[in-house]
Image 1: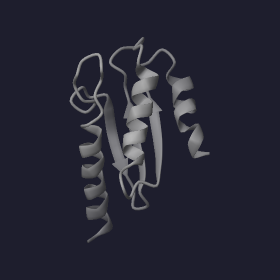
Image 2: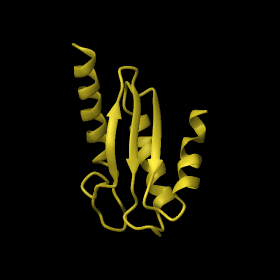
Image 3: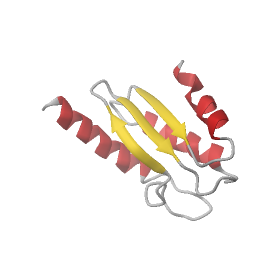
Length: 103
């Protein structure tokens, strides 16, 4: 299996796992709501994606991004995550907070 195929397979596993992360306010999963975008995986299992809460003042943005990160971390083959938070009143702060564990 080529590295490209492995990355594609890992992306599919990540998408499957993300489809189980439900926004409690809407009952829809984070993929259907398009809260996770720009999902990229490299050949070392490093995952990069964007989290965009449903509104700039989303009261559960921190809860959701933690649930998303945990779900992705539990996918075999994922070695690291780099998450960019956008469209949120505290995007920079939340991006720094959620990626701090990677340092």
